[in-house]
Amino acid sequence: MYLPMVVGVDGSESSLGVVDWAADEAALHEVPLRIVHAYRWDRYEGASLARELGKPSGHVTTDDILAVATRRARRHHPDLAVTTEATAEEPEYVLLREARNASAVILGTRGRGELAGLLLGSVSLTVATMADCPVVVTRGDHDDRAAGGGRRGRIVVGVADAPTAAVRFACEEARRRGAALDAVRAWRCPTHDTVDHPLLAGTPERLHEERAAKELEAALADAPADVRLRRRTAEGPASRVLSAASHEADLLVVGRRRPGQFGHRLGRVAHTLLHHSACPVAVVPDTT
Image 1 (tube, helix red, strand yellow):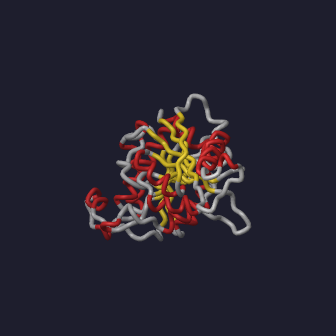
Image 2 (image 1 turned 90 degrees about the vertical axis):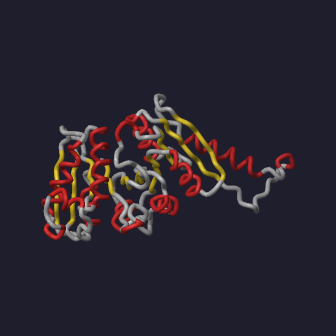
Image 3 (image 1 turned 45 degrees about the vertical axis):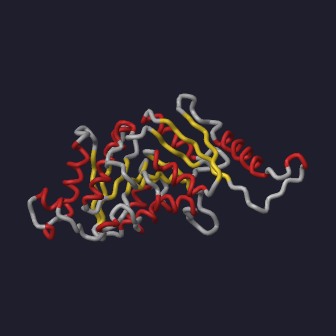
């Protein structure tokens, strides 16, 4: 049985746009789509859904929100299997529960007015930090569509120093989309570094770059041969390097380490990218 993709909606136009993206993803992966609405999300504040229903905004119901979301999901994919769920609970609790039996959870950013789509809300941040499955936050100018491999035909993955679930996820996404995959390893050269060997004195940057290249190769050791893979090392903080790369990507993939003694932690790089990436971000929990 294929696990569904789960998308959270609150009735706003921006969340319905995320349904478009999620429907494309579900169709691409040939899995059902599950649309989830929590009553305690802030009430729908716009006019587009009410206008579509031909009723005042104050009369829009939970059933209306789910019905419109379902129609949106099937607009481009009429044969897509869609189920819905509405519950009077906090949205992060609902989505984390749904994530236990999902192939991915897809969410949007939460903002209002001129900041809509820029601010990352607490629900998306909490789910990305704690979910048992990959979480995609649809940031940036994604045109509300994931079909056709995306506009740029490129996926970027931030690479650690060993094979990870994030790398495997990125390879599979690139293969399904027929997209190229940029595997990026950032490196830094602290100013206090010294090199003992006299022939290498004054060139610690080269040692750091070579080490990063070796770690990148090790992390990609199991990458499928049929993925169009480009390896790239770049000097600088990982969040800055990957944020720059996101401007040329349809999807940015980063990992999330397993919970440690202090519980679930997202990490500074993923946290920054969820707030500043120019494209959708997939946060993939490590399974090893």
